[in-house]
Length: 302
Image (cartoon, rainbow, N blue to C red; front, top):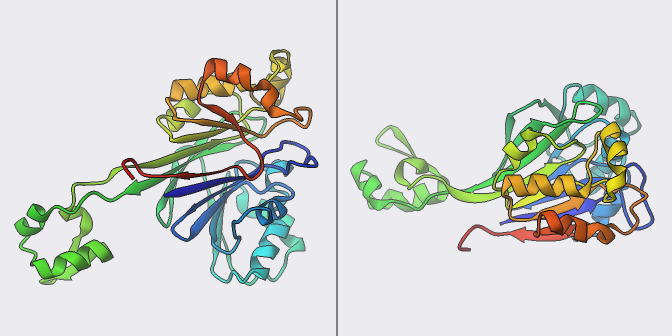
Protein backbone atom coordinates (compact mmCIF):
# COMPACT_ATOMS: atom_id res chain seq x y z
CA UNK A 1 0.00 0.00 0.00
CA UNK A 2 1.16 3.53 -0.81
CA UNK A 3 -0.23 6.43 1.22
CA UNK A 4 -0.39 9.86 -0.44
CA UNK A 5 -1.17 13.09 1.40
CA UNK A 6 -1.27 16.59 -0.03
CA UNK A 7 0.16 18.87 2.62
CA UNK A 8 0.05 22.20 0.77
CA UNK A 9 -1.82 23.04 -2.42
CA UNK A 10 -1.08 26.73 -2.87
CA UNK A 11 1.09 28.51 -5.38
CA UNK A 12 3.05 31.74 -4.92
CA UNK A 13 1.40 32.88 -1.66
CA UNK A 14 0.03 30.96 1.32
CA UNK A 15 -3.60 31.64 2.13
CA UNK A 16 -5.54 31.37 5.37
CA UNK A 17 -6.57 27.78 4.60
CA UNK A 18 -3.88 26.82 2.08
CA UNK A 19 -0.17 26.31 2.63
CA UNK A 20 2.37 26.28 -0.17
CA UNK A 21 3.17 23.26 -2.29
CA UNK A 22 4.16 19.96 -0.70
CA UNK A 23 3.15 16.31 -0.84
CA UNK A 24 3.97 13.26 1.28
CA UNK A 25 4.21 9.63 0.12
CA UNK A 26 4.51 6.90 2.77
CA UNK A 27 5.11 3.17 2.52
CA UNK A 28 6.06 0.56 5.12
CA UNK A 29 7.34 3.01 7.70
CA UNK A 30 9.31 5.24 5.32
CA UNK A 31 8.28 8.50 3.66
CA UNK A 32 9.22 10.83 0.80
CA UNK A 33 8.43 14.54 0.82
CA UNK A 34 7.94 16.30 -2.52
CA UNK A 35 8.65 20.04 -2.35
CA UNK A 36 8.74 22.03 0.86
CA UNK A 37 7.06 25.39 0.51
CA UNK A 38 6.56 27.82 3.34
CA UNK A 39 4.39 26.32 6.07
CA UNK A 40 5.04 22.69 5.16
CA UNK A 41 5.97 21.75 8.72
CA UNK A 42 2.72 23.28 9.99
CA UNK A 43 0.70 21.59 7.24
CA UNK A 44 2.22 18.25 8.19
CA UNK A 45 1.43 18.84 11.88
CA UNK A 46 -2.21 19.32 10.86
CA UNK A 47 -2.31 15.74 9.55
CA UNK A 48 -1.59 12.39 11.19
CA UNK A 49 1.75 12.23 9.36
CA UNK A 50 5.18 12.37 10.98
CA UNK A 51 8.44 14.04 9.97
CA UNK A 52 10.84 11.52 11.45
CA UNK A 53 10.26 8.73 8.85
CA UNK A 54 11.11 11.02 5.89
CA UNK A 55 14.24 9.63 4.23
CA UNK A 56 14.08 11.54 0.93
CA UNK A 57 13.01 15.06 -0.03
CA UNK A 58 12.45 15.64 -3.77
CA UNK A 59 12.50 19.27 -4.91
CA UNK A 60 10.96 20.13 -8.28
CA UNK A 61 12.70 23.51 -8.73
CA UNK A 62 14.21 26.44 -6.89
CA UNK A 63 11.32 28.90 -6.66
CA UNK A 64 10.62 29.97 -3.09
CA UNK A 65 7.10 28.55 -2.90
CA UNK A 66 8.61 25.07 -3.42
CA UNK A 67 11.71 25.17 -1.22
CA UNK A 68 11.60 28.03 1.30
CA UNK A 69 10.13 25.84 4.04
CA UNK A 70 13.19 23.59 4.20
CA UNK A 71 15.19 25.20 7.05
CA UNK A 72 12.34 25.10 9.54
CA UNK A 73 11.25 21.68 8.36
CA UNK A 74 14.72 20.17 8.84
CA UNK A 75 15.02 21.72 12.29
CA UNK A 76 11.66 20.23 13.25
CA UNK A 77 12.77 16.82 11.97
CA UNK A 78 15.75 17.03 14.28
CA UNK A 79 13.54 18.03 17.20
CA UNK A 80 11.40 14.96 16.51
CA UNK A 81 14.45 12.77 17.00
CA UNK A 82 15.66 12.13 13.46
CA UNK A 83 19.29 10.99 13.49
CA UNK A 84 19.58 8.94 10.29
CA UNK A 85 20.80 10.70 7.10
CA UNK A 86 18.27 12.52 4.92
CA UNK A 87 18.73 12.75 1.15
CA UNK A 88 17.62 15.89 -0.70
CA UNK A 89 17.25 15.44 -4.47
CA UNK A 90 16.54 18.00 -7.16
CA UNK A 91 17.83 19.79 -10.25
CA UNK A 92 21.47 20.71 -10.79
CA UNK A 93 22.70 22.96 -8.00
CA UNK A 94 20.52 21.38 -5.30
CA UNK A 95 23.39 21.08 -2.81
CA UNK A 96 24.56 24.69 -3.03
CA UNK A 97 20.99 26.05 -2.93
CA UNK A 98 20.01 24.02 0.13
CA UNK A 99 23.23 24.80 2.00
CA UNK A 100 22.70 28.50 1.28
CA UNK A 101 19.18 28.70 2.67
CA UNK A 102 19.97 26.36 5.57
CA UNK A 103 22.63 28.56 7.13
CA UNK A 104 19.82 29.47 9.56
CA UNK A 105 19.44 25.76 10.44
CA UNK A 106 22.93 24.79 11.63
CA UNK A 107 23.99 21.76 13.67
CA UNK A 108 21.31 19.36 12.48
CA UNK A 109 21.49 16.02 14.31
CA UNK A 110 21.52 14.13 11.02
CA UNK A 111 23.61 14.18 7.84
CA UNK A 112 22.27 15.75 4.65
CA UNK A 113 23.07 13.92 1.42
CA UNK A 114 22.38 15.30 -2.05
CA UNK A 115 21.39 13.87 -5.42
CA UNK A 116 21.45 15.98 -8.60
CA UNK A 117 18.76 14.82 -11.00
CA UNK A 118 17.93 15.47 -14.63
CA UNK A 119 15.70 13.87 -17.25
CA UNK A 120 15.10 10.18 -16.58
CA UNK A 121 17.25 9.87 -13.47
CA UNK A 122 16.33 6.99 -11.18
CA UNK A 123 16.95 6.50 -7.49
CA UNK A 124 15.63 4.05 -4.93
CA UNK A 125 14.18 4.92 -1.56
CA UNK A 126 13.43 1.69 0.29
CA UNK A 127 10.45 0.13 -1.54
CA UNK A 128 9.86 3.07 -3.87
CA UNK A 129 11.58 3.64 -7.21
CA UNK A 130 11.74 7.36 -8.02
CA UNK A 131 12.20 8.67 -11.56
CA UNK A 132 12.68 12.35 -12.38
CA UNK A 133 11.71 13.87 -15.71
CA UNK A 134 12.17 17.31 -17.21
CA UNK A 135 9.18 19.63 -17.62
CA UNK A 136 8.82 23.16 -19.03
CA UNK A 137 8.87 26.09 -16.61
CA UNK A 138 10.63 29.45 -16.38
CA UNK A 139 13.56 27.72 -14.63
CA UNK A 140 14.85 24.15 -14.73
CA UNK A 141 12.08 22.04 -13.26
CA UNK A 142 11.44 18.33 -12.69
CA UNK A 143 8.42 16.11 -12.35
CA UNK A 144 8.55 12.79 -10.51
CA UNK A 145 7.08 9.32 -10.77
CA UNK A 146 6.96 7.01 -7.77
CA UNK A 147 6.66 3.27 -8.41
CA UNK A 148 5.89 0.74 -5.72
CA UNK A 149 6.51 -2.66 -7.30
CA UNK A 150 5.21 -5.95 -5.96
CA UNK A 151 7.19 -9.16 -5.84
CA UNK A 152 5.92 -12.01 -7.98
CA UNK A 153 4.56 -15.19 -6.46
CA UNK A 154 6.93 -17.85 -5.23
CA UNK A 155 7.33 -20.58 -7.88
CA UNK A 156 8.09 -23.92 -6.26
CA UNK A 157 8.98 -25.51 -9.61
CA UNK A 158 11.74 -22.94 -10.17
CA UNK A 159 13.09 -23.58 -6.69
CA UNK A 160 13.14 -27.33 -7.33
CA UNK A 161 14.90 -26.81 -10.67
CA UNK A 162 17.67 -24.98 -8.79
CA UNK A 163 17.89 -27.92 -6.34
CA UNK A 164 17.01 -25.69 -3.41
CA UNK A 165 15.70 -27.78 -0.48
CA UNK A 166 12.29 -26.95 0.97
CA UNK A 167 13.98 -25.84 4.19
CA UNK A 168 15.42 -22.81 2.37
CA UNK A 169 12.17 -21.64 0.80
CA UNK A 170 10.72 -19.70 3.72
CA UNK A 171 14.03 -17.92 4.35
CA UNK A 172 14.30 -16.99 0.69
CA UNK A 173 10.77 -15.56 0.67
CA UNK A 174 11.30 -13.66 3.90
CA UNK A 175 14.83 -12.34 3.36
CA UNK A 176 14.83 -12.00 -0.43
CA UNK A 177 18.05 -13.97 -0.85
CA UNK A 178 19.90 -16.94 0.61
CA UNK A 179 23.37 -18.44 0.37
CA UNK A 180 23.23 -22.19 -0.21
CA UNK A 181 26.04 -24.44 -1.37
CA UNK A 182 28.42 -21.47 -1.64
CA UNK A 183 26.08 -19.80 -4.11
CA UNK A 184 23.77 -16.80 -3.66
CA UNK A 185 20.14 -17.23 -4.75
CA UNK A 186 17.74 -14.27 -4.98
CA UNK A 187 13.98 -14.32 -4.71
CA UNK A 188 13.68 -13.16 -8.32
CA UNK A 189 15.22 -16.48 -9.43
CA UNK A 190 12.38 -18.44 -7.86
CA UNK A 191 9.44 -16.12 -8.52
CA UNK A 192 7.18 -15.30 -11.42
CA UNK A 193 8.79 -11.87 -11.81
CA UNK A 194 7.67 -8.47 -10.61
CA UNK A 195 3.94 -7.79 -10.78
CA UNK A 196 2.18 -4.52 -11.49
CA UNK A 197 2.26 -2.30 -8.43
CA UNK A 198 1.22 1.27 -7.70
CA UNK A 199 2.34 4.35 -9.61
CA UNK A 200 2.01 8.03 -8.69
CA UNK A 201 3.14 10.94 -10.87
CA UNK A 202 3.67 14.46 -9.54
CA UNK A 203 4.04 17.50 -11.80
CA UNK A 204 4.24 21.19 -10.93
CA UNK A 205 5.17 23.81 -12.29
CA UNK A 206 5.00 23.34 -16.06
CA UNK A 207 3.38 24.00 -19.36
CA UNK A 208 1.80 20.85 -20.88
CA UNK A 209 4.54 18.93 -22.69
CA UNK A 210 4.80 15.43 -24.20
CA UNK A 211 7.34 14.35 -21.59
CA UNK A 212 4.65 14.54 -18.91
CA UNK A 213 2.39 12.20 -20.87
CA UNK A 214 5.29 9.80 -21.33
CA UNK A 215 6.09 9.53 -17.63
CA UNK A 216 2.56 9.81 -16.25
CA UNK A 217 1.34 6.99 -18.50
CA UNK A 218 -1.03 4.59 -16.68
CA UNK A 219 -0.49 6.18 -13.26
CA UNK A 220 -2.88 5.23 -10.50
CA UNK A 221 -2.76 8.84 -9.34
CA UNK A 222 -1.62 11.91 -11.28
CA UNK A 223 -1.07 15.05 -9.20
CA UNK A 224 -0.76 18.06 -11.47
CA UNK A 225 -0.83 21.80 -11.16
CA UNK A 226 -3.88 23.79 -12.16
CA UNK A 227 -2.95 27.40 -11.48
CA UNK A 228 -6.10 28.79 -13.09
CA UNK A 229 -9.38 27.42 -14.41
CA UNK A 230 -10.65 30.45 -16.35
CA UNK A 231 -9.98 30.13 -20.12
CA UNK A 232 -9.07 33.82 -20.36
CA UNK A 233 -6.02 33.20 -18.16
CA UNK A 234 -4.28 31.16 -20.86
CA UNK A 235 -1.98 34.02 -21.93
CA UNK A 236 -0.76 34.53 -18.37
CA UNK A 237 -0.30 30.77 -17.87
CA UNK A 238 1.87 30.56 -20.98
CA UNK A 239 3.91 33.59 -19.92
CA UNK A 240 4.66 32.22 -16.45
CA UNK A 241 5.07 28.55 -17.38
CA UNK A 242 1.92 27.19 -15.79
CA UNK A 243 -1.27 25.34 -16.74
CA UNK A 244 -5.02 25.75 -16.78
CA UNK A 245 -7.33 23.06 -15.43
CA UNK A 246 -8.24 22.13 -19.01
CA UNK A 247 -4.59 21.57 -19.94
CA UNK A 248 -3.88 19.41 -16.88
CA UNK A 249 -6.95 17.30 -17.58
CA UNK A 250 -5.97 16.84 -21.22
CA UNK A 251 -2.63 15.48 -20.03
CA UNK A 252 -4.46 13.10 -17.69
CA UNK A 253 -6.65 11.91 -20.54
CA UNK A 254 -3.71 11.33 -22.87
CA UNK A 255 -1.76 9.55 -20.13
CA UNK A 256 -4.60 7.12 -19.37
CA UNK A 257 -4.31 7.74 -15.62
CA UNK A 258 -6.89 6.42 -13.19
CA UNK A 259 -7.44 9.71 -11.38
CA UNK A 260 -6.19 13.28 -11.34
CA UNK A 261 -5.75 15.59 -8.37
CA UNK A 262 -5.32 19.27 -9.17
CA UNK A 263 -3.03 21.36 -6.98
CA UNK A 264 -0.84 24.51 -6.89
CA UNK A 265 -3.68 27.00 -7.25
CA UNK A 266 -3.19 30.70 -7.83
CA UNK A 267 -3.96 32.88 -4.78
CA UNK A 268 -6.70 34.36 -6.96
CA UNK A 269 -8.41 30.94 -7.08
CA UNK A 270 -9.96 30.99 -3.62
CA UNK A 271 -12.57 28.33 -4.46
CA UNK A 272 -10.89 25.73 -6.72
CA UNK A 273 -14.04 23.62 -7.06
CA UNK A 274 -15.77 26.43 -8.95
CA UNK A 275 -13.79 25.27 -12.00
CA UNK A 276 -14.29 21.55 -11.47
CA UNK A 277 -17.01 21.25 -14.14
CA UNK A 278 -14.55 22.62 -16.69
CA UNK A 279 -12.02 19.98 -15.64
CA UNK A 280 -14.47 17.08 -15.62
CA UNK A 281 -15.66 17.97 -19.12
CA UNK A 282 -12.22 16.88 -20.33
CA UNK A 283 -11.37 14.15 -17.79
CA UNK A 284 -14.15 12.79 -15.61
CA UNK A 285 -11.94 11.35 -12.89
CA UNK A 286 -10.67 14.75 -11.73
CA UNK A 287 -10.72 15.99 -8.15
CA UNK A 288 -9.62 19.25 -6.64
CA UNK A 289 -6.78 18.80 -4.19
CA UNK A 290 -6.86 20.49 -0.80
CA UNK A 291 -4.51 20.61 2.17
CA UNK A 292 -4.73 17.28 3.99
CA UNK A 293 -6.33 15.34 1.12
CA UNK A 294 -5.31 11.68 1.56
CA UNK A 295 -5.60 8.37 -0.23
CA UNK A 296 -4.40 4.81 0.38
CA UNK A 297 -3.46 3.26 -2.96
CA UNK A 298 -3.71 -0.54 -2.84
CA UNK A 299 -2.22 -3.18 -5.10
CA UNK A 300 -4.55 -4.72 -7.65
CA UNK A 301 -6.68 -7.51 -6.17
CA UNK A 302 -5.77 -6.39 -2.66
